[in-house]
Length: 200
Image 1: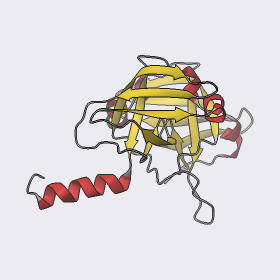
Image 2 (image 1 turned 30 degrees about the vertical axis):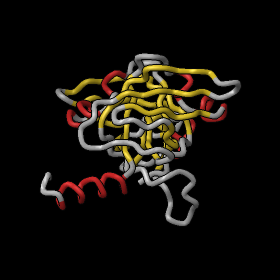
Image 3 (image 1 turned 120 degrees about the vertical axis):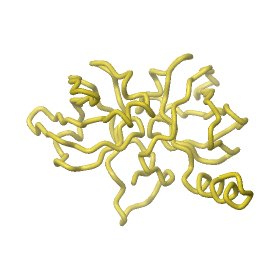
Image 4 (image 1 turned 90 degrees about the vertical axis):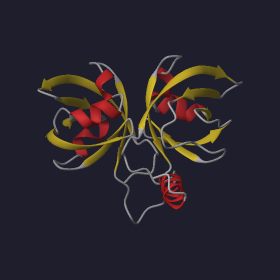
């Protein structure tokens, strides 16, 4: 379980393919503090640490076929930056919203607009089961954000300079594919409504 408040940015330093799986070696400041079996969010995807190199501050995680099909992790290359967050602790403040690290689908950035010190990003996605709501929460590549200008299959988010500089948002441009995780409460409400209306 995560909060969507990015803790660090890591860099992909090696990619190894093993049948349908991909092993990513990540170098990051938090790499020297991780343990094997620890969960870490990578661009919003919860992955398990399988190897650690404390001296080099590097670690390895594995993405299986299911994860690669539902996320943008398969597009990472050596040198790519990723948003990182370790699991939340129960004795701390939840500054973002409840983020499970279970990506629902991907979206495409269609526009980036600078607005006198901040940025507006527009994203488009294929409407399947879930949607956004005005002023609701959404996780984009693991970043907890507030939705503005919500439509059926598109929405915007406003990014402050700190988020722009300390997450991979500064790399986004029109055409960039990102990972989406919709709000868990909204997903349950939508599912219950479909069951109640006999559309499940």
